[in-house]
Length: 529
Image (cartoon, one colour):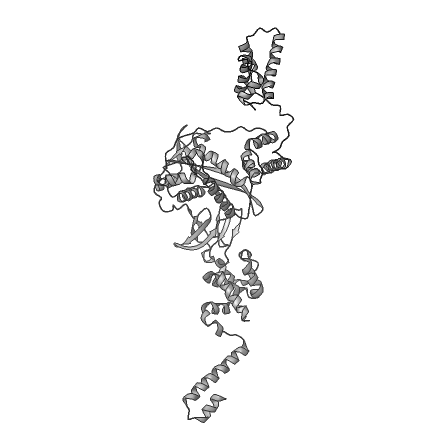
């Protein structure tokens, strides 16, 4: 396709310079048919104008009649966009509709993500082509605009929350994604949490600062409740006590956006959407929270290693390395735990956010100090740790440790098989109980105590050795093997083996004694008997 300027030159050479069509085509490196087409089109248009009686100069006529060259593409067929590719686009849109029905609209695939997926699948197609066909299927979408700012090294990073919904072990769960973005290099960091509480807010800061190896001078927030305690005036906000404490500890300043002004922290505002698209618009099924966070970490590592032209052909990770010398020196890890005192109830449990956690049954009715973290909680009595549990984010869930009920179960061993604590044992221990302790539950309680002291792997190893030697599996035998592993081959409980061993030892003793008393023939005979 020739340009408008070339078409203009063709007409001027023909009408003003008087050159022939073949000469024009040779001079301009064009096809003779192309030159002929534009001259013929001009003359036909001119004739139509003159027939209407319009009196117009030649220069004006050329100005009106010369326009962008166009080709008729109505009869063309798609050579790149195949039926298979269209089917994939339709599948993406169908999956988006499914996510919309689940309430996770923000994790729907956009045109950019669809394009990247098609490229990964081996299709050769341009991004504008994908956009054009997506728009035909789902319509146009308005884009949000941001104002570009200039930042110095180590000056500003931004924080925001985003919602992510994932299928964990087949069940749809809602997560809150805490996301940071650096203003200078647009380095991204994010962590998934089950809730948007103060402990999660503080924990995200600690993880980010330790991840980048320093602290930015200013952190920018919107008007989230974990950061803003009160609105003092139209543009004045008072920070929460916990934000003041962590800012004072690490030495950073904080700034809040105006209401409904997400563009004031455009880096992280856009980053939340971008991270969510890249990490969770395709795969939303994971076995555990930990697996989902590992997947997120891997995606972020990939994103932060991309080289960006607007960063002087550097990746965000490379810019971060340049920034580190300008960051505030990192202090030891800030303790983000929420500390509270709770009374132990009659089930020997404490209640945290509707969920129960066991403590030793000797503490029933007493108060214990509980430190609540994002992923665990630790219980203390008289400054000594008495229990530690993985934090549960369900509703009305019980987290039990059978060792905590040792004293009660020794008094009531019959209650063991039907207890909730027993149901939460590992399948290995349940199997051991069923095979060896079904008629001796009290003995099993002692075994649990032995496991808490030595570890389950060691006990399982001892049980395997007992089985190999055909020795009865019970707690007393296990205890002997655990405490006397060097002499394990001499511990024999079979009656016939005992008699054989005694006879052997007696004969050896008599032989030794006989050799010492060489003059006593009777002892010699006894020794040799």
